[in-house]
View 1: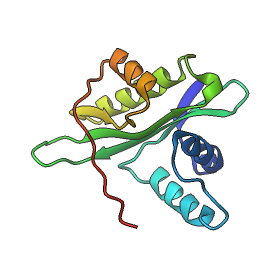
View 2: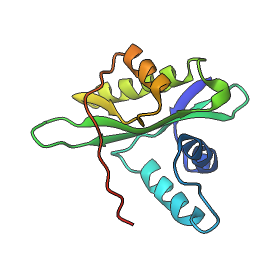
View 3: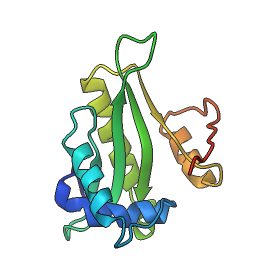
Length: 146
């Protein structure tokens, strides 16, 4: 298994993983717009999405990695809004490899922190993040607008 930067041709595999995570399914109606958004992020210098690829060349994990500026900080924050490993590959080191690569890229960019989001019901993932050295720092609130 290896971790590399995501590429435009990875879109279909990444979309399936994100759906498994609970994101909206990409449909025939939304596919072109979603593919364009993905391609724009893959080429954006403030984004460095990562994929884990198994020995057969299949994408088995995805880590969305954004570098965002925060007020009162002089360096960026590395933010992971999505981290997903295929069910068959969990507990095989894929998630750890993805987070280690994200952390290394954040350090290379001089980030002050690596943050991620995780749904309340993903208790097993929360234990994994704690073992990785991350702390639960708060809650996230959302109001759907459409």
